[in-house]
Image (cartoon, rainbow, N blue to C red; front, side, top):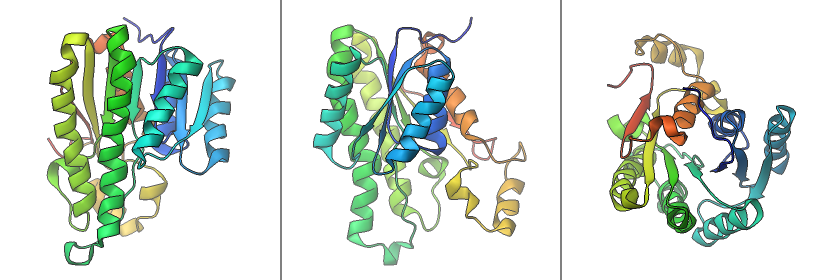
Length: 249
């Protein structure tokens, strides 16, 4: 069976670059009309829109702050109003501010928890309303391998991503009766702008710890997201799908 999201509307937060852009493009390839959010870089967001339109798809970009719960709710309302419905929510927007526990500032902790966890919750809360009326929907949260195994220097980031796993499982139980599924995708080390800044020696050591012997690509993650968004995963909910090359099993 081929993946098809024809006549579906998907919202991807943080869709202006990296994994978010790859997810938006993959969902559009599968037939979905895609809305993406961006925090500040409108030009990059429009590049994603242009890329989708070049493929023959339809896309819209909305400015939205994932750390602002009111902005999250307004974005969902705007998407439903302008595109007619909401079938897929991909909570991808996130930030990371690395630092040892003894040096983490309150504002850095709050920034990561507000954006990565509270923002996802606010978007799910808002999206659940139209999805419940439709009696269908797929919610996909982007967690991280460090949310499962931890990582030195990333206590706040890991806590926010671990929180997403608990949120995913609770939402899956709560909304299942309305045929709304909620799953998480947990990427490992993915070749993005963020990992490109890692020194070559460190990257080499990272790859040595990955059984598949390579960094993942944004498209690897996007393929998993598209599967969970589609009816091919219709009997899957509350799961954490690892996309990490085997580095954590």
